Amino acid sequence: MSDLLIIGAGGHGRVVAETAELEGRWDNIRFLDDRTDVDMVLGHKIIGKMDEYERNSKKYEYAIVCIGDNEKRLKLIKEILKVGYKVPVIIHPKAFVSKYSDVGYGSVILAGVVINTGARIGMGCIININSSVDHDCEVYDGVHICSGSVVRSMCKVGGLSYIGAGSVVKSGVVLQERFVLQDGTVI
Image (cartoon, rainbow, N blue to C red; front, side, top):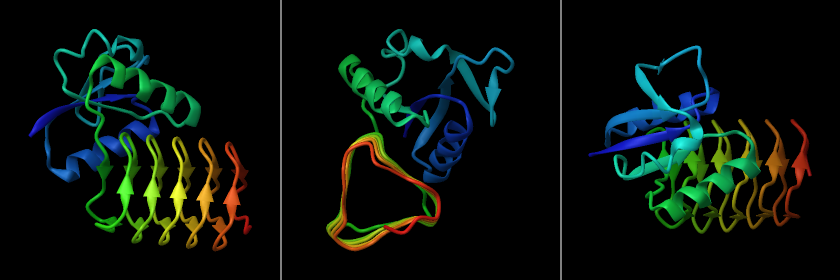
């Protein structure tokens, strides 16, 4: 058991905090956030501003970035790795992640997600509730696959892409970096 520092206490940060609680591997969870209206989120203390991660690196071995903006999230993950944090993968206990898949540092796999055999998820990805990434897909760094989306077999999703809620990426499709797929779109 270890302590976890979550950078960002907004909606995504709260979802990740609860998911981390359910994992049962963290003694204490703390936040860094720029909010001034509260000092606790879901019973966990906000101990400083978001740019104070370096100052806290001796107190916390593990940190995860919970910012919805793909580019900012990925950039900050790279910065906290340089400072010396270990950046975990957070996986909801009601997700299925094949033991024959690979999930990169700082990625979050939420409830109801299925990641199949041979899938590779990059660093700092959000694989949101009830979505799936089928066999032999490559999801590059900093991607957000929104709620209820399906990425079919053998797809490639370029870095920093956004796959909108309820969307479907058909088998074998290759999406370029920073691709934005609107909610409910089939491509």
